[in-house]
Length: 513
Image (tube, rainbow, N blue to C red; front, side, top):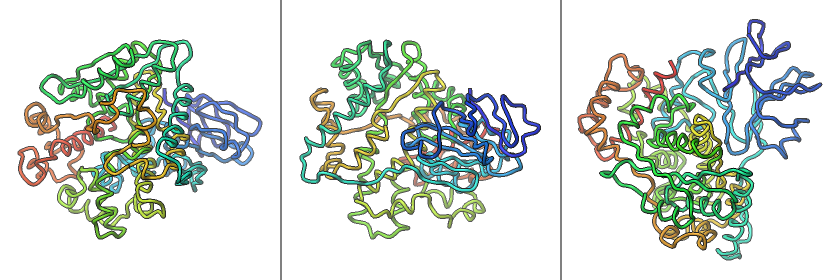
């Protein structure tokens, strides 16, 4: 169950507990002489407590009549607040605040969602709601950063193997720490290096059964089951294979988006929920391999590195290259958005600009961006929200703050070694896995969006997106969307992913009316 806190004029608020200036609704909390701690249980004695805490919670200072919202270091949990009115509201779920703000969209957030498939930074799609950033604490007026990932390259002269052993030692410790005592554990297994090494170490370290879960989309479509099955057999796990049909994905999208906060417009949201529900039948805790790409320089960094080598540079060009690298709708915005909407956001600065110009090694600059935004606003938000919706706990050892800090101490050439991504992670776990798993190029889970929109979803997508009363109609040029649905224009090779962005946005707006 989600909870809310009202701050300010709270006389009319029906609450679990309240005193002058604050009302707590349905939250776990502890009341001390000076501090009320709300949300995650922890011992709070003042801001010096942040040196030892890594949690998301709210503190009410009874003496100063002041509220403090505190978010964990990397963004495992979310925390939102309204920014207008005599009564301000706080909740870990964006959806729980729907009754306390207007329906006005933040147009810059809309632009960024269409460019990235998620909403980056402190903005949300709602104009009157903001998100507390990872590693910060704040009241309603100002924010203070208490933790931030920093480049601190150590041991430049040490070998790849030496750095790999450091990664291995920490990863073993983190996984051992995350294993549930006296009960089986689950692992989401794609067959890539990240999920495979987490699975292998869980199988090595745990004294109970390890259940692994993999998906495919049916015989006609590409699959990585060959590699997932190989890892499951190698690690002697109890392996579960789930087939997810295009029909199931479409039907489950509304309930999936209701479990998320801001929309996430990539296709694996529904499969993530299906996996979590399947895992709930056998385990209470499930491990995943999220974090391998942002921490150890996965393949999506390569387009930006080429731009750095061969592009003309400049702050504006760097931002454009970064947004283009997502391969979503950034280049379509001038025609996809209605003219008045595009005019309102065309000159708005990008949330990525200052980080793209940080004075650190270029690969680490990209990694810091991915950790700060993709991690907190997309990867961790998605996996934690959807596992929680299924009633289980998701844990991400490769995205633990200690692993983030270690990854930024490793020389960049050991993360992307020529054309080989994640070199140091592969060195760390090479003895645990078959060679074909360690050394195969990453392809990722392939979803046949183009085929599905053309053959299965086309009629439903037309009815949804071209309706004159569609939620997206005030913002989106539906004539362009019709061209995409009719396979016209220059978007042909990516139109399935772009249509999925719009379908996700439309359904998210409907379930959050």
